Length: 303
Image (cartoon, rainbow, N blue to C red; front, side, top):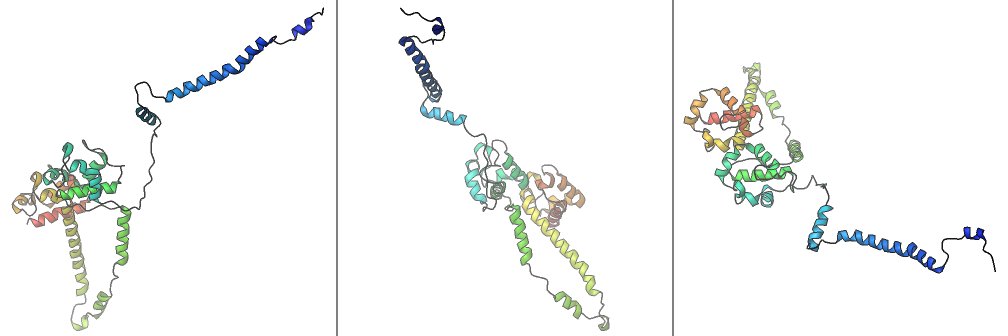
């Protein structure tokens, strides 16, 4: 009969028989595997639609949760500009073709008349920033110049005569090209001056120089008259051509007579700062000199 050494019992492991070995294997391998499977099922269950929710609705909800916060769009600044008619058909016709939600209908002069008094700048600001039921058009599919072209297209169909806007760079390039292709001054004036008779022939030598200031004054007056006519056609005729809001009609001497009697300075001051239904400068951003020229143009037509 052998004796058990107490020292050997102290150094033996917890597994003393095959049953204990099986239990240890079960808890060491099988239980963790089932735990992992359960965790995977729990995580993937979040992607399954809730009871009563279709797969399509669930997908839409998922896309809404992971949608991007903002976008960055890079546009070609040199691409050809869309015409006002094209922008109108794509962006504006929905409301302005039918007069929906109070929008002035296209080519309806009566509806556009009061609005044209704001001038191009006022109409463009309303289009870009939004007004009433019309949302802001700035930052959409078209740039600001193209929106401006649509505004001009609709306003001109309603009785205005605004020029079609273009990119500042294109305008500057056109001006530079015109300056480059302008014909150089000829030597004819110099030759004429050299050939003109002097004191020896009895003709006063100072006659030609004296004519120069008169020519300069006439040229300046013609330039001012052209600027006044241009501003009148662009801004003022919206009201003054038809007498809208009690504005004196262009060329109506009876309507203009009492106003002309107040003096040119009074008329110009009223045009610059606004009077009655007329906004300052007619709602335009014209210079003071051009406003004075427009007033003089209308006054001269009524005298």
